[in-house]
Image 1 (tube, rainbow, N blue to C red):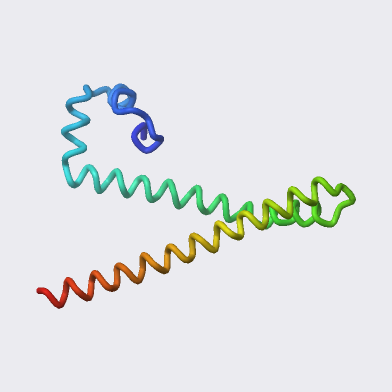
Image 2: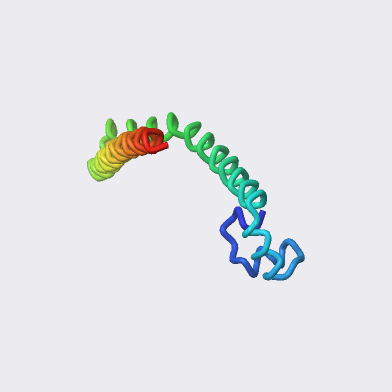
Length: 113
């Protein structure tokens, strides 16, 4: 659990009650690394689900700020929304480019085999 939370090797080893050398040896083990990766993926899924659940409420707050009489709050809300939208567009573009590169790599790898 300590490794999943971003703890240092020393702190993670202490939490697991093993020495750093043991933890380093475990980290060289494919099965251990796969289990660690699975744990990280599960933790990320939980966090993502919680964030998605908050999106509606967050958008409602921003919409209220935009519709309210406080011009500064409306400006901050608008800038925040626009900034996140630009971030989302960049993420989607990057995801599409990575997908295309992976498809190209898979195609070229299979042709070479």
